[in-house]
Length: 92
Image 1 (cartoon, rainbow, N blue to C red):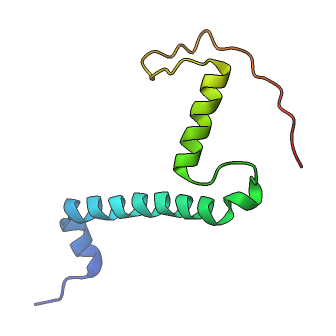
Image 2: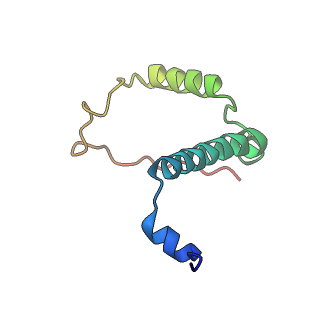
């Protein structure tokens, strides 16, 4: 009896559960890497921006109440009535 080569097994077997688990771990790793990068390096590239998620949320809420912007879900948003972009000053 001849041994089955690796390429032959790959063609006949497929583990969907393992593939889904690997994908979930990869997505989790990407999200964790972005969070860690922001925590470690975010203050270097954006020193005036809040660093934690609680600070970011409270900052956005403060900006929304200051500018009197309504909170909208994706279902309420209209993309046809969008305002023109504001010109922002760039800090160096």
